Length: 69
Length: 506
Image (cartoon, rainbow over all chains, first blue to last red; front, side, top):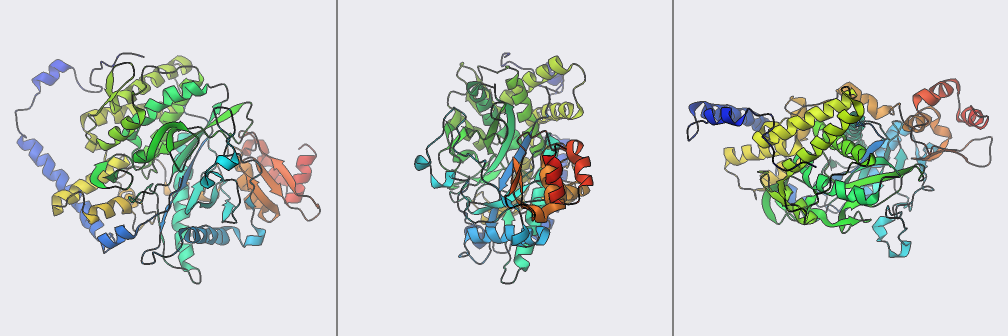
């Protein structure tokens, strides 16, 4: 087998990466992107809220299985 | 070399009767299996039972049989306990194993077909639960395609692959131990809870990892081994061995199941050709299996026996490169479509796991689950020990299309699919056409009243005009296909006609 040294797959060359280093701290674009993702997840959570069993603690405690293979 | 070979998946489902903690799990499981069998196959008298004659669960791949007296009672899977146990028209086996309903797919020849008939199993379970609840005296029960109750119990999802008998067992251990330790980054179903009883509240990649305690062994219910040595090929033992993989998770994601079967098949093909990646064996395989699962940041470095230390993703790249090289050497520029697809997806997944794992929330179970859990933690300020988060973990695997969270994500297009509802619906009723499962399933569908029993390698007819049972062996998994016997079955009206035709050498 080959050695473990590996260039990052699927990414651009290292010199290009160095030039594209973002400034320290999240950029406004990154913050905006995170907010979009959060809003997207919240939409799923709102739907799931209605599906979840009512008494979570009791339900989870009651889920007891016998061992299998 | 390609992803094509005889393979299948067996899954024990978790069973819960909410509000009735005293209902016996074995009884509830029997209700589930019997309800489906009665509804789909008819009453008990006319139903084919499982034939145990050819089972040898104590056959060890290392070349000897364990004595029955030394075996744990749970290993004696060939003793008919009178529990529900039926063969379906799609060639699958539906039965009660220990205290769980279990579905074993029919034998298929490709990873995509494994996904299809595995998904058909989820549908069987979802329907069976509803049918059991509707029986007189029945009660609502819920089935989960997961692998632990987070209180110390685990139940399995096993993969089976038919291998050339010549493949050395030592090579299997050498190649597959690092492969299984590292593939969790793709195949993990996600779990809250560290340790067998989930004592510490944190997220980990795998449902099953913490239940593995030894490197190689025959057991499946105690001292579980990374490499299981059960060697019951259900085929000519001179020609084949079976690789029984017990270290995988139950996947809801079709992509995860597809890649689990496809990448393992590729590693096995290389292995059969004598290409073994040496130098990848972890110094401490069990500790590495646990540590990889416990690190969802994917940064953990596995110490290898040759002195290197690689992350799980880097180890997977080693296997990918070996497979890609071997495919191009043996198949040239044009591997078959599925082999090329598995290789492309494998490489894409590993690239994404290195740069932005959470971008795979629409492809891999552990990421999809973690995205939901992270969302709840952020939105509601919950800690990992919140019962609500544990409920999300559990309900992710509920097979009910209304309640199951993975199912909901799939319906909303938030978890990618590679099959359609129509295909899965057909796979619930019809067997794959290109293995002996076609003969088995079609015999049940067409001549069910005449079939007394069946197993992986036989169909047994009970005919009115013969005193003795008539056993049709199906030892070769590549015979009994639609192409092989389709025309014969199409022109025989009854089981008696079929047996006569077969006896006459049709």
